[in-house]
Image 1 (cartoon, helix red, strand yellow):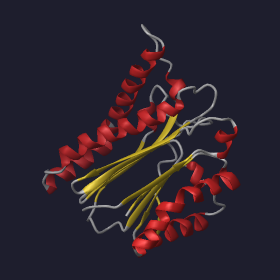
Image 2: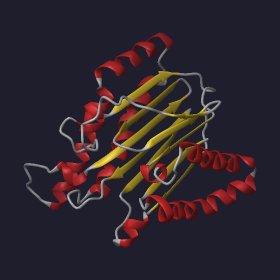
Image 3: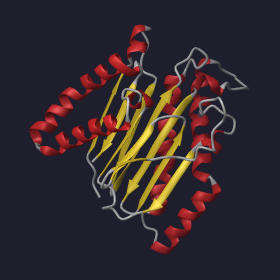
Length: 262
């Protein structure tokens, strides 16, 4: 199934004030019958000097590993697919592979800063990550840290994760030694018509609204305008970035990144 992708990202008010760039990064990849999307949100604190690169590497690692998975499942028969899904839920291979790939990217970058390094400081690249693989027969959501994924079927459905897999008092991050344990994964076999639309966004967007109803109303309006006709779609493409800048300035003060899958 072919999807329309609309995305936007803005530097948050507080980073503009500090004369810094965005710590967010987003990336998506169109597939023959679906899409892979990822958003990373670098921590942006002084201790995480390269978190803007960490978020980029997290997205790249997510796209890499989910692309490998897509190649594996696209010609898999129904029975084999059910067994594979069960296996992926239990063995944490996706989570482990994403962490390993992210660390490879980090090591390559770190060596450009400090040659002959023996001990990489992963905290410098601290970031969260949310990712999606959506194809005709599979939906996969993953998350470490904050950020949200919303799917629309007949109603607003905020994807929720295992609240027990959290480090108490610490924002879950890709820099953790055992980060894969805190990458929550949801994977299900679906019918391609089960999801009408899907939206994923960094916490800068979530924190710009007082209630989920306000957030949902904003998303629904954008989806409806994007789908209404070519003129309203043009207007969304032209004005949405400014809308996000207003949200950041007046509310969250944070970087905002968002991807619509329609």
